Picture 1: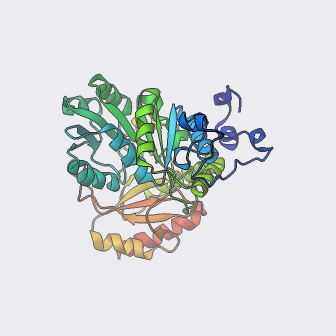
Picture 2: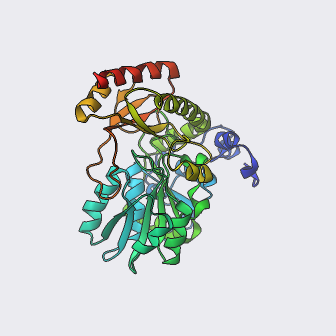
Picture 3: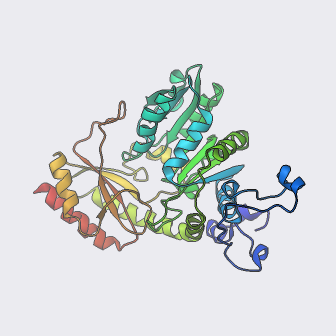
Length: 388
């Protein structure tokens, strides 16, 4: 693609980014390179690592193709590709935190991130503190002299609060801390973290980039100031992703724009419909005007994805499980971003700040690519079962 490719439409960029067919004899897709050993032409080149590829863990044409495509979307200086979304969280945290450091993590964070912080990071001597997702500029009061990282996620996992990312970034940078963001919900199509002051953007590429519920992958993209340290940690840890998975995600990128648009339209239709259904106390979707953070979402985001939560009107786990067990099209399974609709019970018992209150149990919905009328009928079955 040309240097002015950012002026092209997003679907054009997705269709053509990451590789040049002329580099590979005209083949449209880049090669899937299965590599460990790379041969050198002579001893001097080997001693000086004087060639582009040196060993399989340090990059191949396949990983470079995906990393280049992600950099184009993120506006980043570099991207590492790791075997899972969770690895995309843990590698940058390990890269920038040491014993004695303090990290601020949003209390509504993805649970495996919290688990890693409460186990591994604390065991390594890192002081972990959770903050309210609505802290905004007020996070400055929580920053200590040894705060090295502020970890954000917006909208929040399961409860979908929207963070004031630019305000948080300004406060963190004023104190010398870096800002990381899990941006899996929006993807760089609907929110570009680095444009809003974030230093490191994290994605579970398992979700919308892959799009078919059959690949595990994560990407971490950094600005120029943070790229070297992130990359060196990645090389040191050796947690590279397999070439077939990388290729599958690169292929998924080609259709991510049209898939996301369908997820968005269907989810908004269903979310608006659910607001008027008996048995639903609230719909937690930031793109709805009724959401308390809608104005903030509208200011910073240019679209919404297919995942949101509902709050049932009263009851507890019994009603929550009745709702879930009555569903016939929605599968009961973790992850999201695939073609199929999913539902999971929401547990908030591990939170310390962002606990609610909520009128009843929560259920998280991933709206897939099925027909909206069929999904509405399925959700109506669930609501009737919960009411019964």
